[in-house]
Amino acid sequence: MHCNCGNTKLLIAAAGAVAASAFILLKFCRKKKLTFNDDSNVVYLVQLPRGKRVPSISPFPLKLETYLRVAKIPYENVFSSQFSTKGKTPWIHHRGTDLGDSQFCIEYLNKQFNVDINAHLTKEQRGVARAFLKMVEENLYWVLACARWVFGSPSRAGFPSSMNSLVLYFIQRKVKQYAYAQGMARHSAKEVFHIGKLDYQALSDFLGDKKFLFGDKPCETDCGVFGMLAQVVFNQPDSPHYEVIKKEFPNLERFCWSMREAYWPDWDQVLEKA
Amino acid sequence: MGLRGSKPTFDDSSNVVYFIQIPLRGLRVPNLSPFPLKLETYLRMAKIPHESIMISTLSSKGKTPWIRHRGKDVADSQFCIEYLNKQFGVNLNEHLTKEQQAVSRAILKMVEENLYWVLVCYRWFFCDPKDLGLAQSFPWLIYAFIRRRVRGFANGQGMGRHSPEEIFQIGKLDFKALSDYLGEKKFLFGDQPSETDCSAFGMLAQFVFSNIESPHCALIKKEFPNLERYCHTMRNTFWPDWDQVLKGDASSTKL
Image 1 (tube, rainbow over the protein chains, first blue to last red):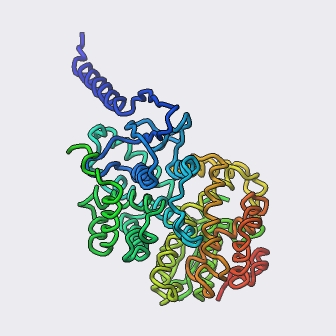
Image 2 (cartoon, each protein chain N blue to C red):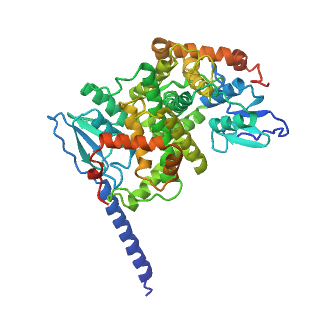
Image 3 (spheres, rainbow over the protein chains, first blue to last red):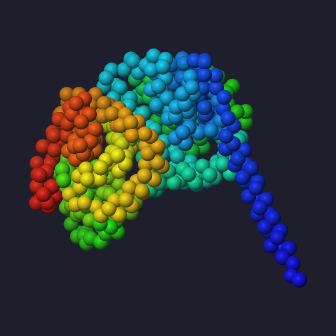
């Protein structure tokens, strides 16, 4: 009688590895039912767990939370890997309403709380603000996504501890697919860096010596720009993107510090301890 | 109409720029894709001698348009412009201040990376296929195949995850930004056009001249009429042969 002991051991090992992977993945993706108090006027901001160097390793939760602080809207963080109905993060829950997409959230909250942090802008400035917001969120975002996830192996440095290597692997797979669909990943790493540099140049030239993009008061676009640049300036100090900002566009780093000091005095306290 | 077209032959000793664009001649626009229209408008504005070739051969990046010049292929309309600026010593943004150049970059990206996807979603998901405005209709199987691919791209990029009303609202905010910035000016930055005008025109022309049945066109006419005026200004200035091009009479600019 022939004994297939070797194959059996291999099968058991493979089954064990699959079970362990599934457990680790589920631990991150487990959809614990979130409960909210719908009688309260508090805005629940649902986002990924804190990073070790930035409050969020994704620019959009950081944008939205910064907006809430600038607009002085009472909110409560809910740290969860549960995504919105659009499959993205962050999202909000307010008086029984769930809403995804950071910009739709801002439009909703502006109405609900009668807020307009763009009120001090002229009509022409609002047009420019919209353009810069879209440049940063629909172009620079993909430059950074490609730099982090498409070219080379992503580092876990600065990420929340709950995001282990397996989770990062699945994120990387998805981002590569999305970045190709959007178009940025069709370019070479050098071309993508060049595209990013032109965006930094535009931001830096427009900001000039001003404290914020349009003067001494921040607007919605400052929140979006800060959310994006903070990923480079505070979270990726070893990246060529940070190097080029430090060397050629130092006012962008100064801008990040201005936003952080003004609206995140508790920055160090909120981070996950390294 | 397949996407693996024939390879054209070029005269690489000549200084002429071969401008290769996908054959999507519209009933009402020279090309249903905004990027060939952008690049061709730039070539005309910069007075760069060029020859248009309409074939379905895509670029090395799988996109349209691309150019060939002295044996070199360049893909992506913006990389093409950067290359041609160097080769021909052209700078259509020379008259802009540093701050205006920055705003120009921001508007370019808003139009090409945001408004573009509003157009794509409208055309491929919400528009009646007969309203596409193509000069030659797609075989239905090819239309269905492209539509499926575009759905995947739009979901990956993000715009495809929104509802039709949300996508329309996103487009409206972009139109408003363009309209508010343009104001009463002839071009985006005054009396002289610049690079970003080529892109803004390439995109807006799709709504204003091509998809005339769309709610976007109706919105522009009603709330942002200066954008329609702007499109006519660009067309009259750089495309005096617009009607001939549509009929296929002009060889699409051989300078």
